[in-house]
Each structure stands twice: as structure tokens, then as C-alpha cells.
Image (cartoon, helix red, strand yellow):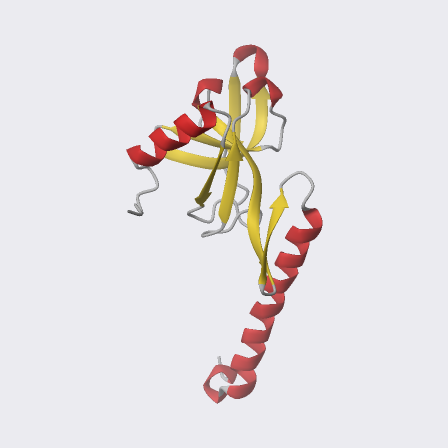
Length: 157
């Protein structure tokens, strides 16, 4: 059974259990707050991490009072156990987190490059992410061009 509720208790229970056992969790990201790094509907892999191993700009999965958040660390104070995150498209920081709220760190995502699905690491997958971004933008330009070229009504807009 697939649940669409991003804050489902089932997801939380399974994710916590798997991450505590040292396994990774893969799930479909929802929302556009991390675009273009992570787009709505992309599959993201999250692995367990100790808060002391985190660095600024890491993308973490955290359980907050607003639900699950997959956002980037913008500031952190390990001595006081405070982590502040923000979505890449966000204008404001999220409320501060404690290390206990962090479930894991995003390691990679799955990308469509042409007809293939490939895994791009967030720390070393720059080339694959750039290829996917170029493919996405090329498709967008192509659709816009063909809409104007072959649709007389679109020319007058």
C-alpha cells in the first residue's frame, strides 16, 4: 500500500528503524523548496549520520513540528546542538533544530538522463546533476519554441 501523506506515522517508523540499523531510506521527495537540487517527485536516498559529522550545506532529513523537512544546513552550532536549515528556494531560515530531530543526510538522488536513470551523489555528482539540468532546460525551451512556432494563438501572447 502506498501512502501519499508525507507525514505518515508509517514512514516515520520505518525510516527511523532502518536508519538506526545503518540502512538507507529511499523516498519520493514532495514539494519544490529544494529546487533545483531536489525537484518535486525525485527519488532521494538518505543515510544515517551523526550530527557531529554534519557540515554546512549538507542536506538533511529532519522531523519537525511541521512534518518532515529535507533542507540544507545554513548554520550550525555543535557545542549547543543547534542546526538551522533552509530550502534552497526559501527566503527565510527554518526554526532551529536539535541533533535528535535529524534523521539522516541526503546522499544521492536518482536522475533521468535521456532514457537512463542514474544516481547522482550530492557531494560528487555535479556532472550528472548538470547533465540532467541541461536536459530539463533544453526540453523546456523546445516545448516553448514549438508552442510559439506551431500555435498561432501563442504568438499573440
